[in-house]
Image (cartoon, rainbow, N blue to C red; front, side):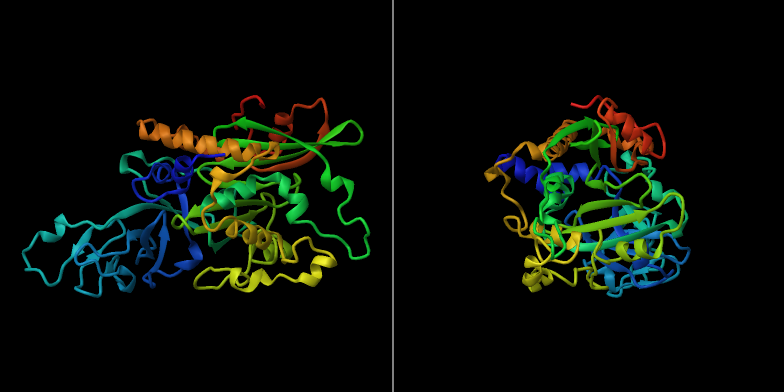
Length: 422
């Protein structure tokens, strides 16, 4: 378990906090490209790491992410006019480009150089894979953009989705790393089955971790017939991404738990296939069809099924086919995560078991990196963009096969560095 102080450190990501500083050393998703499709279109406002921001696409198609408040009298730039390569505050007409430079102050004297000394807070942006990414750290520490596999593919091969979740980011991240819950929370059966949880669902697992250039590889191993093991390998790559395991030939899914503030998060999911366009079923599941994504309100991104309506739980279905009665894997996750002690879990009162090894490892890594950053040691993972081009793995293998070899066989490139399993 964590102490109260450690729990505060790992869950708080606002400006000036240790974990906030760590998140700001990485490229993180900010908004979907589809939210700002038009040049000179209306800006969108959102929060990220407890900062109020706006995003806009200028006349030339360049993306800007600025602090929402105008540096002049702190009016919201959300109401601004996006025109002629800049965003003009409607209150007094001050205009800012995508880099935050003040390019016009129409009410000041014609020969004034005041605007040259005014700067809006602006963050580095990168558009790739259906997402606008932001780097919110020091300007002299901007890392290379990670080689996420789907960002290198044609648009027909991937789909990006976003939702708001009413809890701290860590509750979602830990849920993604928790293999043991799969046989319970997501359990379903046919109504005519007497044994709704067969022996296979309760098979004992062994849990292993390997350090990587991207974070951790979290592995769960269970016994199979014919002298084989079943391996479920979930990459945790920093600062808060996981890849949901599936067979070698299935579509891949990444999830990102990105803090909106300390009690809300943005859940980004991307589904992709490296060799072909996504098929109709994959697209449906990736866009809210009861798979890794959920149906959301188009403006707020709040799930249609949510805490206020019990996530559409069907108590009759709990007797006839569903462990929870809640429709869809992602909604089942959200229901327990949002109601896990409230928006911030009191981890100092937990009782962890052997099934929580990946969760303990992720917590330890995050706190260690945050502490080192406070000492002036930068996170080394950001300098390995190629290490982020990875996939999850769920596969059977003979018991004498090195699990890391099974992992490497499922990767798009062979450059991922892994330490021995421990």
